[in-house]
Image: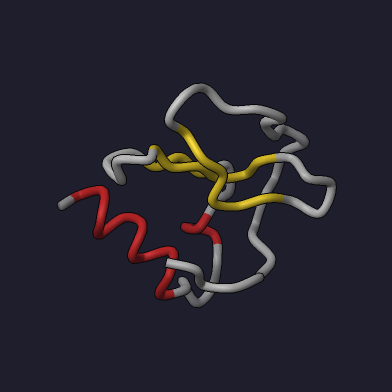
Length: 70
């Protein structure tokens, strides 16, 4: 689901420039680096930011954890 554009709490200078087979970007930084990804089957997600540090926690960040715990 596209939740639009928003800033995230990223406390590092890391990012991915490419992904392996069956992985697609789901979040990118202004410099084009990949900050989040998912697999095409929808069974795997990866994020490179800290949603737990947001106050208040955003509903879209909670959805990531609810979905992955499911």
